[in-house]
Image 1 (cartoon, helix red, strand yellow):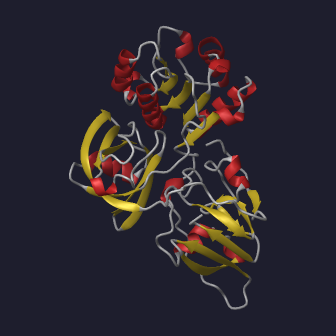
Image 2 (cartoon, one colour):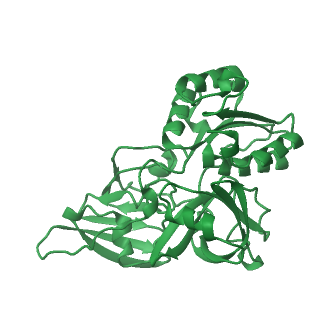
Image 3 (spheres, rainbow, N blue to C red):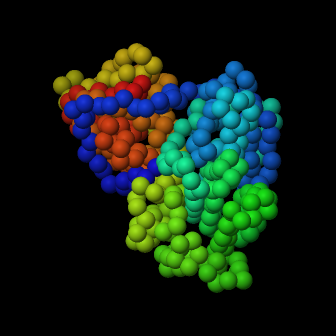
Length: 387
């Protein structure tokens, strides 16, 4: 994905909206935890067994993510995690693997690290996301990634898939961590390097531990990023870039790449956090319409059925929050404008979209919005989750 809008965006329904191409409806299915193994002191890899009858529902492309849903302390929680292993193959039953890192104050990640075991059952949403190569190459391609911390998870799937399935492709990875022991998948990366010594280049950067070269010791600020890119990676030779990690690092890396002449269309971005509490999900206060109070009318289509809900203008309620008051199965995961699970086509009306870290320019042109971030600004708004 290439979008990273941080200020409110006014969006109007296009005169004619083209249908989305082959979008799969996001649906939760109960899956059994097959394995839990430690990665670092604060992270684990969790494998979910996919039965044969759900193999098609859980087909995915490397770089995509899933959402997990469960109840903790009487409240529903949802978390979005990137798939960290290459897909088994189209329609093939296998395992979905995600890496969970303990978040400061994170109820779900803390519970998972302390209590999750093989045999547990968790609801898992079908894979989604655009953090995948957009080019179709009939020649050897070169990919590069800049990741920090748990941002390595989708990169692992991309590296494993492309080096395994396309024998002439190459991959460069700049991977930043505080110390070597904090690095997730460090052994797996070393194994991949041994397997593909001429096709995988690893550049570990440590912020709190000295490395033999000063270039790889310290924070990935703009100066160090530019030095790495110009001296080591040479952006003009890379077909596509993948940036994943904290918001500040991703935006910094993108800015440097653009300054060095990389086309925006060649940069893919995945955010795990924007620095806000986007993982909490929509928790609006109870909404009541006072007689005579100005309202917006939201109509929507979901799973072939239609619904309508009104929301007070004064509430500044998002379309997602309003729709959830009448349909509990409206799709969403992070509710922070990051994952894109809640996206829908705006058929009628206008909205203000507060954040957009998920939709690409072509999707915006087709009328897609993030319903978790979109507040109606016209009296009537219509959205279509089925498009």
